[in-house]
Image (cartoon, protein in one colour):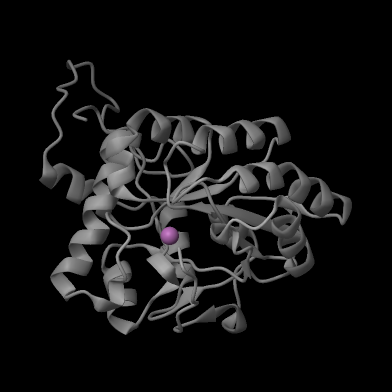
Amino acid sequence: MVGVIALATRGGDAPTAAQSTTEPIIPEVSEADIAAAAQQLGPRDQELVNIGQTGVSINRAGGGRKYVALTFDDGPGPDTPAVLAELKKLGVPATFFVIGANIQANPDTFRQVVSAGHEVGVHTWNHKDMTALKPAEQKSEIETAAGEILSVGGVASRLFRAPYGAVDPAVLKRAEDAKLLSVLWDVDTVDWMRPSADQIVQSAVSQAQPGSIILLHDGGGDRASTVAAIPRIVKELRAKGYEFATVGDLVISDPPGADDMSSESRSTQR
Ligand code: NI
């Protein structure tokens, strides 16, 4: 899509492209514009980028507040609208780690994610194991996906999640070069294996702790069990006194300590 980049319409502080001008807006965004915009950081963006120390991913927030973050990977796809509908009913913000090629295939669904106020993060263009790629390919997988997020959704993401949780020093350096905070998780619901909704609820609720980042999927296959599990996860965690935040809000309000970060991969199949 060619259009006006309204930078950081969600959760950022960068100025919009159309600020302080009465000139007609020229609806052309070059690759160079996108690359430059992706490097532009507002104060909140800078805070997020600074949270990860060099060469680490965060697995959870600091644990000082009874908040958790729900994260949904591998979309946007056919089940994303149902996930959005559940989150809307519950009044829960979430973070979606999106695949660039899926944004290209489902641009309207991606814009629904953004306009609902959810946070988005880069999950690469094609969901390859980044540790098996050459540096130039790693860079391209990240930058093309970040560019698609910006050009279709009008937001500059500051978060990165490696496919399969597979990271090494080179992958973490590529994320850092793109000014992205690498985010993994501490609670894996293993929902990609399509267990029952009961099992997804059980694994999310039993493992959650203050500051947890919970891994779920809205793409990569039939996600009916995940959709069914969402209201029950939220109800049960609320009953235990938990509230919900995006990953960005979670980690800014409750910064991770050294024990909440790692340079290691976290293995998952999706
Ligand atoms: Ni994935």
